[in-house]
Length: 229
Length: 229
DNA sequence: TCTGGCGCTTGACAATTATCAAGTCATCTC
DNA sequence: GAGATGACTTGATAATTGTCAAGCGCCAGA
Image 1 (cartoon, helix red, strand yellow):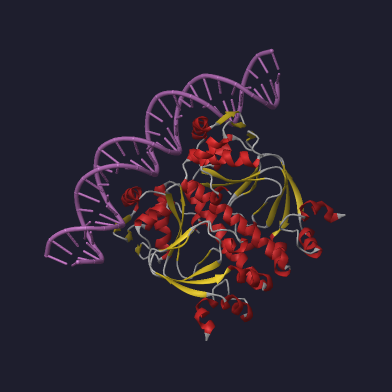
Image 2 (cartoon, helix red, strand yellow):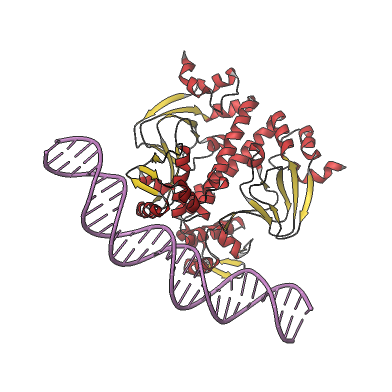
């Protein structure tokens, strides 16, 4: 059956509470697309014709200005993106490229807007999703504006360590050069910042990060739920 | 009549399309509060009990971490704030203080959530408002991540000059020290950046900014609708 | 197994930005 | 009008961050 292809997203917060009819209306015009690694799938400024959902793989959102570029977010299954542009029927503010081979579900923006009008549960879910995105953006801005690059890295390590279960180590989910860009620093500076974290209980071996002394790290990073939560 | 107090906000995008009944439900528990200048009216981390609307005056949103603080936005009539926290029923991510004497309309968050459930026009308006806020935050992040402090200032001047009608001059709406914080730089650095803008067609006299050569300024600032629009 | 490529690291240096200190200027108060 | 206050500016210096260049090491493909 046709809509089976989309069963995997039926239980996402965005769709969990909507009617079968609404879900059918959303998936009717939707399709799945596979992308090889390192493909730019969206270019900022283009019209936002689809809501995108990461079904598998990993996506980088980034932006460019005057021959420099900066990573803004990394997405994993089942993150959505381009929601705000879809709603407002405005061009993308960010470009997107695959980090690895990825499968993307694309729902036409017009269908989103149509169902949004008819299904108040969907409208509610969209509001919640947008509110989460907005608060995430504010947190990220605070992170950049209030902390030095070394502090940003320390908090990145502390946060991902906890997220991975505080087992004493975790694997970086992206290349260090992309991490550097995400944290608003150069790869060279990231290298030195990792070296500096040795004094705060962190050791590095390739993409494996070892947290030898979580308390010492937290004492330096001073994580805050209003920035890192 | 009681609800007359709130007629001034009836035509805001957030309320323009909603029913009289919904508007009455929103304003029933609402009230107006006057604040003197330089009062911290909201502290980050507090629960978001009200949606706030600036009726008059000027509000600064800012955030603190580890004895440093940073301005994130300046609000004017009739901007709204705390919408995302209201929706999500989460604590404020930013503090707010008055820049000048201000009048604030406060609508209980619970009423917002109630009417949101019942009135789909209101839900739609909220989504649009949130989408605008989100896109604004992303633009601001791009501004910080992709540009130097001098470039940020140049674009700030160019944007506000256009907004003021491109008449060759405009008044800074806030103190320079606050502007510096907003642009992620120190007051000293802002002073020097203004001095540097003389080479690009900008002169400064107190809080009056004179744009002698708009084309020259734009050539340096390279404004971009995906950041400054 | 060798080898080229590329990401990462390190060092030296440069640019940007922040800090500290002093001085100017306007405004407000008394 | 005198004095105090505080914002702003300017200069000197320091810290942070970026740039350029070279070398290391891992991995993929020949």
